[in-house]
Length: 109
Length: 115
Image 1 (spheres, rainbow over the protein chains, first blue to last red):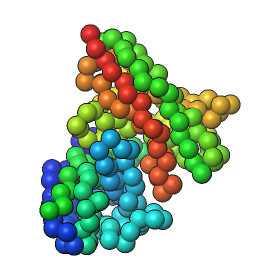
Image 2: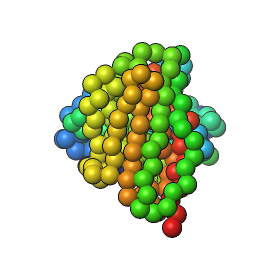
Image 3: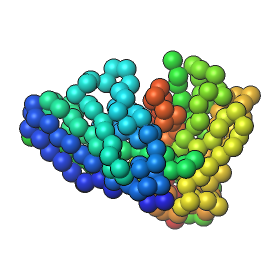
Image 4: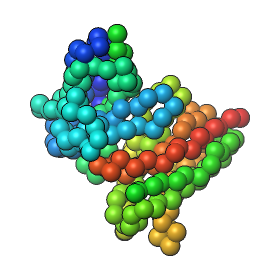
């Protein structure tokens, strides 16, 4: 099972929006409504920000939103804030296993 | 509140084995699958495998099959990840997590493999 494909980096100015993609196949992203997104700051454990494609856990700001079309899932961060600068990883079911994306580093300009 | 506590850092020689533990508290042990994830320094997250604490059924990523064994001991609410035939590129921080909506993560265990 290969890692899901994400762009290595993305950037946006304070207050702007940025969208990152997570591309898989019919066997993973395309088959399940179980795509999640994780945010990771340096030397910290990942934090769940989106699950089941577009659901936010309690406490996650509604600036974070998720969607999916076909084999590609997307994460949009609206109204970028300085603390959004971090690495972001998607994760999908693939059968009874899971797979992570390659990760995207978001820079806030 | 769910809490996952992992065993401490390990320093191993190439070819050796390591066993990392993950103790669950704050919710019934059988509630969620426990997943194992690793991250080498400066690299991305890699899913290793998962275990169903209720049945003991486990699934491991193809790349780790034959080298990783996941087990659990229900009497102490603890799951274990055993990684054999260690190589230098197994050096990483290993996490346990439920990878679910409760977003519970262990604190991470540094495993360092050197010759």
